[in-house]
Image 1: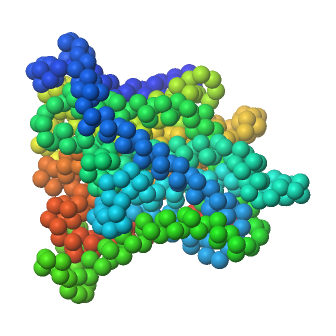
Image 2 (image 1 turned 135 degrees about the vertical axis):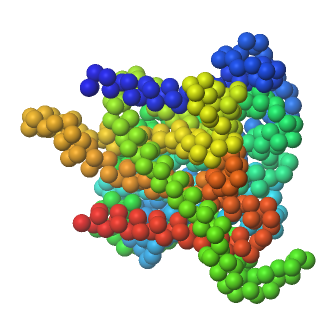
Image 3 (image 1 turned 30 degrees about the vertical axis):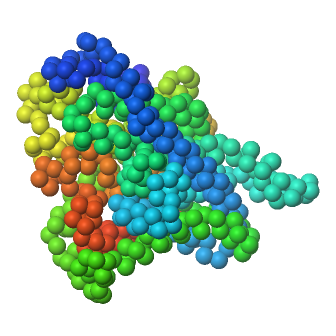
Length: 266
Length: 293
C-alpha cells in the first residue's frame, strides 16, 4: 500500500490543475474558437486577450490597485498584530480571554453583513474609493488572524529569551526589534502570507468600497463579464493573470508553510 | 487556541497598551458598522431618510419567514457536506504526501494554488469549466452520457457548487494536517515499529492526536468561511436555478442591496451573525476545556 501512496497526491493535484488549465488554455483562444467548437488546446493560438489587458488602463490599473491595497493591508495588519500577540503570549491581564475571543468573532463576521455599513462609514469619514479604505476594511478579518497565528509562534519561544535579554541590558524596544522579531521571522512570514492571501482573494468589500480610483481587478472583471456580453477569452486572460502574484508569493514561503505551522503550537 | 504557552504567566495590566492599536482599529471597523446594523434592525423607513422606531418586528418577520428558514437550511446542508468531504479527504492526502525532498515543495506549491486565486475568478473558472457545450467538465460528463447542466438542474448546480468548494479549500486542510504530521518526532514511529503496531494503530494513537489541534483550527476556519461564502456561488450560479442554491449571504445581499429592505436585511444579518457566533463559541469552549484537562 505504501508503494502506491504517491498516487493520492498526484491524482489530487491533477484534479486541482484541470480547471486552471482550462482557464489558461481558454485565454489563448479566440472568441470564435471558444464559442464555435470544443478544443482541448488552442488551435488558433492568440495573444490578443493579453494585449488588450496590458494596453487598456482600466484593466492594468485594476492590478496595480489590488496590489497596492493588499500590500498596505498586509503591512498594517502584521505591524499592529505584533505587539498585541506579544501581550497575549506573555502576560495575563484583565479580560484577556474575552478580548481574544472577541477578536476572533470578527474573523467570523460575514462580509455581506458589513458591506453596506462599511460603505456608509467610509463615505462619512471621506476615504471612500481610496486604497486605504479597502486596506482598512480588510484588517477586520486579517488582524484577528494575524494575532492568532503570531501568538502561536510567540508562545513557542521560551520566556527565558526575554529574561536573558533584560539581564544583558537590552531595553524593551531594543529587545523586541533586534532579538524577538528575528526569532519569530517564520511566524511573521506565515502571518503575512495569510494576510496577503485573504486580502487578495476578497471581492465583496473591495468592490463596495471603491468606484474608480481604487477599483480592484476583480471588480473590473465582473463588470466586463456583465457589460460586454460574453468575452470569455478576455475574462480568462484576466483571471490567469490574477493567479500569478499568488503563485509568486507561495513560491517564496513554500518552506514556511509546512514548517511554519509546525513551529507554532501544533 | 489556549491563550499563551505556559500556565504561569505573570499578571501585567500594562499589556493593555500593546493591545491598544489592534483594539482601536478593529473597534472602528467592527463596532461602528455593527451599531449601524443594529440601528436599522429596529427601525422602519418610508424613504427620505426618515426613520421610525419599530421594535422587534423585523426580527419576528425574519425568524418566522419561510424564506429565511429555507436559506438557513441550504446553508447548513452546504457547510456540513463540505466539512464531511474536505476534512477526511485532506487528512488522507496529507498522510500520503512525501515527508522529505524535492517533491514536498512541488506538492505544497501546487496544492496551495487554489487558495490564492481571487474568489470571483474561482467562480468564473468553474462557471466556464462546467458549461455543457464548451467547458471541459460539462462536455466530458455529457459525452459520458450524463445529462449534466448546472444552469438548469438544481442537482447539478449543487454538485458543481460542492465540487468547486472541495477543489478550492481541501488544500487548506491538507496544509494544516501536513504541518501537524511533520511535527511528530521520528522516535514515535520507531517505538511503534518495535511494538509491532499496525498502520491503523499508528494513525489512531500517534498521528491523529498530534493533528488534533491543527484539525480543530482547520474545522473552525472552514466552518466560519463556508458559512460566510458569497462570491463563488454568486458568480457560479447566482443562487439559481430558481432559489435552489441561494445560501444565506446571497439571500442577504439580495434583500439588502437588491431590494434595499434595510430593516429586514439588518435583522437577518444579526440573526445570521449570532448563529455563527454561537456555534463557534460552543466549539471554542469545548476545545479550551479539553486542553485544560
